[in-house]
Amino acid sequence: MIEAAAGAALLVAFALGAALVRRRRAWAPPPALDDAARALRVLERGGEADGRTAQDEAYPYKDVRCPYRSEPLRVDADEAERLRAWLALPAAAPAAALTAAPALPDGLPDALRVAPARPVRLLLDTDLGTDVDDALALLLLLRLPPADVDLVGVTTVYGHAPLRAAVAARIVQAARGRAAPPVVAGECTPLGTHRPVWHTGTEGLGVLTDAEVARLEAQADFLPGRSPREWPAARFIVDETARRPGEVTIVCIGPLTNLARALALDPTLPARVPRVVVMGLGSRHGERAADLPYAPPDVPVAPGGCFGFFPNHNLSADVLAAVRVFDSDLRIDVVDHHVTGQLWWGAGFDTDDPAGDPDDDPEAAQACLDLLAAEAPPEAAVVGRLLREWLAYRSLIFRRQVRGTCPHDALTVAEAVYPGRFVTPTPAGHLLVHRWAAFGTFVPRAGGPHRLSAAVDRAAFIPFLTGHLRPTRTGGR
Ligand SMILES: [Ca+2]
Image (cartoon, rainbow, N blue to C red; front, top):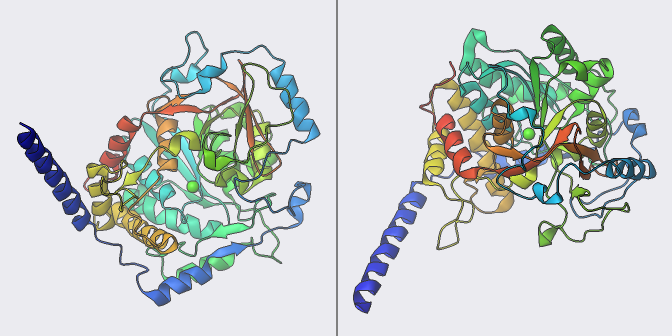
């Protein structure tokens, strides 16, 4: 009996091992960037450029180097005052509702659970071109049924914004041809931050020629000594929402410079935008041991009080823009790292673990391989080439084969089109984005203009994403 059980276990182990070997053998490393000279060129082109200008005089911490995610929170006096005022409001829900509960408490006003008018008119604001995550989100969006979503335009932001627009345009034109929605370049220079503009040097590789990349990079104005100019994305946001008041949902999956600029151009913007969905905020304070040291904010925290968040790239890349957007009257739902960090798309990262990576999803792994090799349809071919460059770059940086990516932005786009389907929102509240490095403090109170993310249905979302990113998929046309 024991021998039979051992034999069965061996067979299972062998079958599992064979399956893992089969899957791993199926993986072909992305050849792009394999050439050492080219890789070196990418590393030289990338790096950071100090984009500080006269614009960010209003940002008080611009000369302070804040190690990303490792500094304790500082709270300015006026911020503490606002937090105290919010905390003095009656609590709307027990603090426990903010944990990863499967459902919201009963009786909470939850307008977003009501199905939005279809199709959702959506404007995508993105820093597409560096992390491939944005390109996957755009591909997903282009493949959703037209009855569900109407993409009214794409705006690009941060650093090489004109180059980002050129790459985004290749994707939407490949998918839609002459019916492609407009793609509009936006702000290159952050309004105010302590962080230099960050690029990897892979921007445009695989999709644009070297000459095109050089010409488009030369248009960016975030470099020292160049005066920032107003790119047309902010004007496009103002005009498009004025043309369709109350209809256009804005989804921001990059730094918030364009939206802050649009608010400055037209302070009445919040009255005609029904919803903004932002990918932002890092992990919660104390959520992981690696987040320490953590110093609690110097404000009274009552039961049902406030929740702190570390910065993430999107908010800290332009702190002042994030502060202005969250201080406005815009109604904003945040898809935060607390939920996006639970996702992985493609083959698993942890290839050295003999038990396999718990994130390994054979369907997603195969779809990722298929997308890397795709030559058709054209939009899949474009995104596949971007994916190839990105995975090759990540493998170079991490010195191990990176075979997938975290779909932060794709989840954000899905939440914008299908509210509550994959992401369980927190109760409403007030999110304060701190001027110090874009830390966040959230005070849940009825009537607040913001919601964060309490939970994600990973088992539903990853197959949904995989189904839409498969090269053979041609939905949405
Ligand atoms: Ca992004």
